[in-house]
Image (spheres, rainbow, N blue to C red):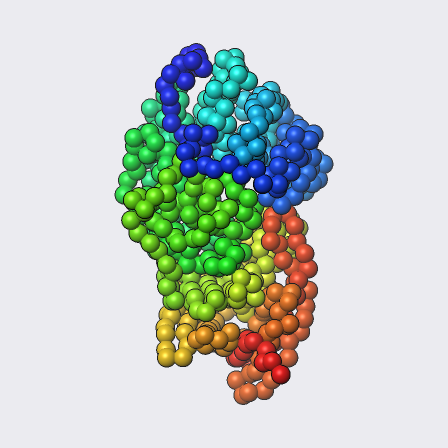
Length: 588
């Protein structure tokens, strides 16, 4: 690469969001949590998966398992799945450099200058991770995110004396080397994986090609990155705004990428194809429709590896308000959120929220149907009822059809179990990705689809349908799918959900067609720990005979890498129908 000086770079005055020039930012010296996190980082402790503080001696050691990858082994020779090494995500998470935003935000809010620490960490990573060697060169998405986060730091501290011409040259050379690796291997993400990996990598090519125009391949990276990002957005986000990874948290990853893409293009006088804005808008409508109004949380639905690429507020990891509001403002859509800590993300993305640039207001409706992705939502009287019912044209991640999530007054009364870990023992992989961890029905011990290795499922559900309706006194969802092909043909699970208006009362009726006679049907529920303080659940068979529940061992993973025991209620019957009522206890 030809030499390009820091002075040349500054003279170009490249634009990037997430900089200190964001005019809407307001200092807040009362953010004690931010102050504590910055102190942890100064003590070489890092936050993994937004939940676990750990100390790692270097960039190659797994702090959970103690295994250290060899830093001089070519990346292609390093296995990503190893019982001895443990979950490689524990190595990758620190090398994403998402923690930089705690240091940047700390400097802004408390008028500090930690640029020396920021650039020492980046400099050390470059020294300890030779080009194309070691575990941190395996994944193109990890590389792309690291580069974007480094650019954020470069842009924020661009006038700092700590960023010497020699250091700038070293960092920009590493960015070039890393993006050459991404460009050379992006076929895997675009043609094989085709999920958020492809979105991150293609966007990084576009950003780097624009922000560093002196790189020899910059024009090509910008052109291809733009073309491929548009293509992936159109493919991965369905026309109704749902996402092919069937995961609320991974969809939020895409929301942040979209916000960055839109604001970065706008700052640099560029514009995306219309489909990008359309899918961004539809994503916003979908996620906001599934959001609890009180907490800002969404169901813990689908795979969740703790990813939050750009942590820019003091909100809880599960609170989606910062990301949804920022994208909404980038699109000119007002979500009517009140003022709160979540407003900071919009400011960091250099988005000025004014009445003039907000031309639309979005409020979720009482009934919403997202057929492409397979989600049906009832919102009524501070309750949220979400039913999953979908057929698969893209690979499924969990066997969770007809899972029911219920929220009341900000409490996730009946919840999803989460993900736990992608590199766990088979027992845990089968539980958290299987039917057993969802509020739906199992036949015997069989999942709705047949589990393969790792993320693979066989016998995909191809037939599923649902309708959602409103009557005078209630809302209803009628849904069914054909599955359990491992047991035979024509087995259908039909679920009817009736939500009484203005009351915390649900009737759920499950029927199985062509149930194998030797197997019981198990209706499974994962209630909140305080469920029985205010609510009750009863069930009966088709003849009106009461069915008692068995409380079995359940598990819950709100964050990646951690699991806790939870209540799991199972109603079982050798008949083909279970009718269940969930309601508020009547006060005496």
